[in-house]
Image 1 (cartoon, rainbow, N blue to C red):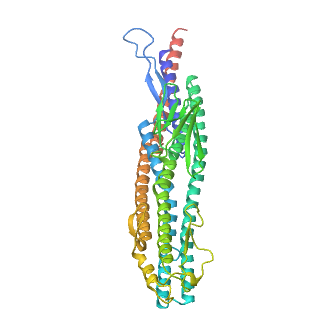
Image 2 (image 1 turned 180 degrees about the vertical axis):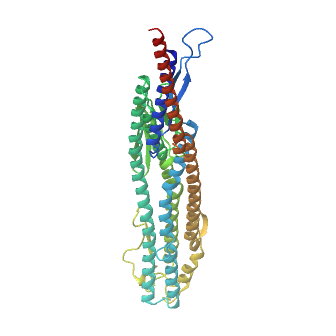
Length: 459
């Protein structure tokens, strides 16, 4: 009977191994699937004595070929790649808008100073003065167009952040539910490999949204938190991330877990959320302030110079620009009702054809102004330097994104080397365990023949 039991245990073990191999082959194209394998262990003799070889084989468990270190490497890579890829479309749009010669601020400044130069030939000419006003309006429109683009990007970032918070809440709820189902399955002795794969895929998705830390607990659950330590998922309980719109136009993040509320800082968030914060506060906000600084300096310098001169009728010159830092659509505009005759080009009220003050205005192009993120810079160079800085930021982000893509691909390949299904390997397993099954059935057949022979001898 021991021979039959041994053969029967071997055939059952072979069936379990064949079942695991067939499951692996069936899921060879399933994203996130972790291959499984039967773990075999010999069964010690049930009878006493040195002549008892043993009591067969048993499947001690079905093992998931998973490496937590490789999982974490893949999730970290997902956070970095998502952070860089989220920012790049915004940078590309800014580069395109600011670098457009036909609509850029540099073109507007060149047009304005060209009109001033043309007017200096005949300062008393009303048509030439009108051209200066038209050029000033065109310059103002370029500032306003760029300011509108920046405002739209800020609004898009806010909308994307709100959408990401909703996605994070959905994913953390899913992870918490899977934690509960996995714990119940393992407690009842059910294979939870499929549920664990689903949970790992959800964690990978969450890592793309925000950088995370993952810790396993004794119940089989995986607890997830932000890099700064605030909990996202603990066991079967998920937190809720909320975005609050402030009156200043900024947004703040808060994490609600059980009865606690945690403030979430924008820096070092990682993932898409971190990328948006880095772009908004590290690139977009300083750029918006720099454009505003240039508009303010141009308005102040030109208006100061114009009002120091005299109009055609000998009266003090009128201001040409109106600067409104609170407006996202009309940052700079031409003074309503200003006429060509009102421009104070003359330095002498008794000489309307004098151009001394006009020449002083032309020289303002070389005037040094203070611009956020640039410091002291010439008016004519300010926008060019902003474009250069933006180009460097964009180029650096592209390089980091390329590196992050390579790291992510390598992490995925490393994960697949341990957890992925290899058809050739599974084909070998099928042959080996088929042979094992057939050999054990032969053992049972031999045992039956011996048993029948023994019975025949006793008749």
